[in-house]
Image (cartoon, rainbow, N blue to C red; front, side, top):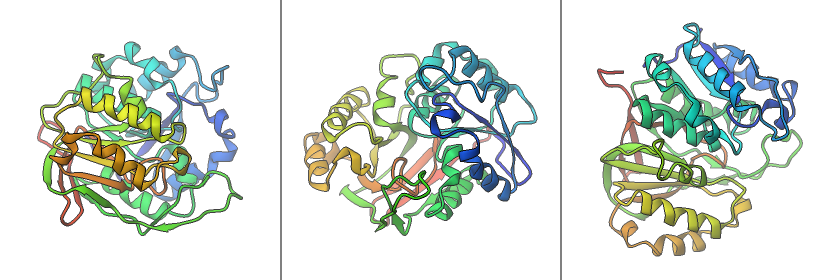
Length: 322
């Protein structure tokens, strides 16, 4: 798969929520300007402004936009507008042969978890869990987020390091107050491990369980996080289901949970204590992953090495077959 470079063309698509659901095109145009400042050309899918009863678009329109982006040889990378709730509706209708024949960087997070993992499962193509298009309009914390994203999409290998500070506020509201805290990645159980990175949003990944769209690598490291919608009781339930679907992870990496989940460190540790497995493998938590800000980018389907001693997460994304 070709890495991204200045001058390349990024296509923005909405496989879940539409741009209208998050204020409309003009409210998010600063994200386009940020990507252009980084040296990229930005275009939008044919059905980009479609908006239905579900704050989304028809399945047919969303599938058409995704196929068009992969088939267009001028498009070098694809960003999703934002997450949502219905990416998994698209999975039975995608042309995975078309996607496999036109590999390119495909990046988003949250509900995009379903597409990222399904595409990897069906084609072997690596995908990227990181900022969506709208994420680039964030101001505070953007330097770390952009740097981490650029590492992932432009390099054959990269190291993830902690941000200096983090927030769990409504960054997308221009007048919302922001409170930042010092970042500290933490260790539940120490150790070293390596494997294929899979995962993302816990509740969305659960939607793939038992389907042909669930990734099934032999040796895997689970990266797991949750959005603002679920409280800690629901998170505990989903985590249990995932550890039953994926009973042999080499390690587990947990993103910080947004404040809306009411997850505290005490509650999280009590949840982890329920699972004997997690005392036998490396487990990190409170990392810069997904629904708190800023967020780093991981490569689904890539080889990743983890060492809790020096808090290192090293991704090797290129192989001879890429």
